Image (cartoon, rainbow, N blue to C red; front, side):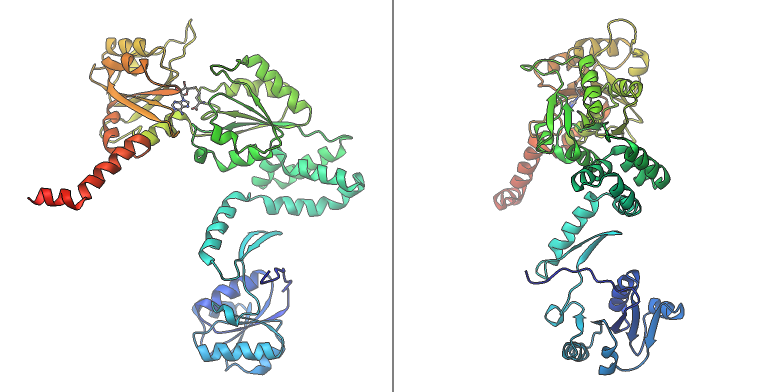
Length: 480
Ligand code: SAH
């Protein structure tokens, strides 16, 4: 270990900053946030430092640096562009055993500033000891995105309730379980995210009053169309906290990999070769697990509210008084078309996009064919493969031209993605051999696919054409 990471309480402690330019400003900002008493030694000051001096937030010593100034400093920072002066500050501080940092000059630092993720009172500091600052910046960006914004708020609430919780649960293990359950409780998380602190603390109080705190809940999470990169951050957090995950056939293996290792995974879908689970049984399972106090995730392909029967499952939970939340996902119509290179709308071709299902109940719920057959719009058909022939016939009957471009996107966003294109009158034969799950796209925008394809096999063809073009021989041939 090259450095010992420590957190220093600088409140009202004197810190000497030598230099008054923009580099000093950066450091002073952080020092002021930590409540330090900042003294700046400089002959001239950056504009924003002048303002701080006028506001009496910073003390300005408008003179040359001397050893006397270091004597009263808790920490020293040299932030000048004068190498000799920086060296002098460094040596003086070292000789007086003061911690010193010459900015961006690691050999002349007895301490370094880490990268910080600030969710005060929770703080995360990372450093590579100067070895790979870019790597650390990238890591910090990743952590920033992963660490919930409400962490600080949760920690503050915990501080206020620490004694009450200790009184109720004298044993450490009980206490730990209580906090663990509370911090991962979706309703509690939602309230703290929305800064509804009063309601969050009321919820904490209710849970604390229970003899045996049971905090079962269900999150309905959209897994997206397949590529694990399309899962939302919130979806990822939910499946990593879940005790049990009930998942559909459409949830890809890459997403299932992300589920917490010791969570129970329960398949409740309908997939060839596996048994099918009835919707009523799934509903009952959700209720059963939640009532056992478990954090349940109901993981669905795409978005749970788009042809996903998500609403029906929530109605059951509502009637059983089980808390629930919904994490949207990227629906197949968005994911598969994006990966196929088919924009759903386009100023020249389609001002409307409609998502419809080909899986209609036998009675009633008839599609409005005259509306669907209109021009300047894109139709995206979910579960449409079996009804492809009927769809093409009806649309043509209501005036959609037989030459309207169509595409079938199979396994959209997955490495096995396949895109077939053709015209409306051929739709049935295109559908015959297409692997499932597949989405039908009907409309002029499909024409753009041949130029905009960027993913999978289509993209490989694109790259290889480019390569041929750029081979010196092909250039020579062209020239000849
Ligand atoms: N809730 C899901 C849709 C469920 S209906 C969503 O929002 O995406 C199931 C239908 O979705 C399938 O029949 C198919 O038409 C479509 N679908 C789902 N995933 C797909 C994928 N990766 N590629 C193509 N179509 C997909």
